[in-house]
Image 1: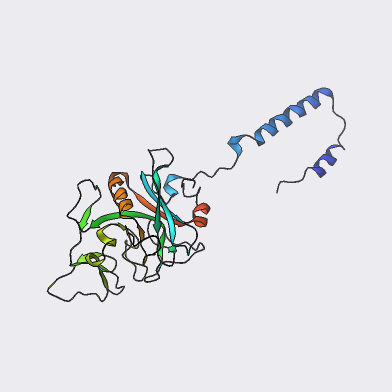
Image 2: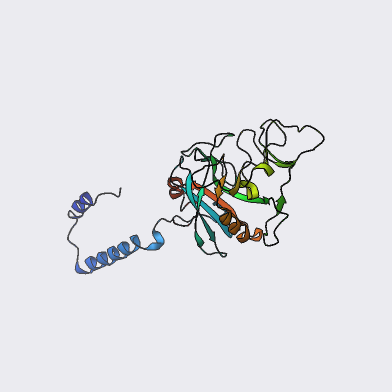
Length: 276
């Protein structure tokens, strides 16, 4: 709160009456001070150094997912792009999505849990990770699509995503040896997750390094419908995931930003995010 002006004015009245020239000088100084106090150059700003932003300055494409709150399952995904030094601008229409069956929780990616309100992502909690994440390999059942520019992996009957926190391969996609038992006790047989894994994108959550128990096998993929949450991924229609895959360009360093609305609004300026 700024200091009150009343006492200061009372003291001023005890000074001797000034001459006309002195009064004019005081008025001029007061005008200059008033202008300076309201000058935009002296106002506090919310500018943040690009180096301090969790969304890298090199990122030119962003997938923004927003849900109503930490426990909400439905939400919307909006694509954004930007030119160097320019603000984010939306691309296309918003896409309906679902997240984990129990909502969102702070994950580990380009951002880390920092004690802010909200749950922390754990293995098996049914929550999708919140924060900022790089996007990795795409995958699917088909041999490939030359129009998809991100790296692509064809899933086979031997492709597993390991979700056993005790295994060295935790949170990685591997092709198991058909002639030997796998060295893990639990994994997703990805080719058998149909139709959800017919097309998808790896979200780089808990990958550098993979911390046991912090969550694994997080993807963007085809949904089972708008009424069904996932085990921790973000899902949408097959047409929507296809549109996204054909739009993404690794040269533009695409990222996923995924937050409940209150957390998003609280970070709008400090993270350099576009207004909703």
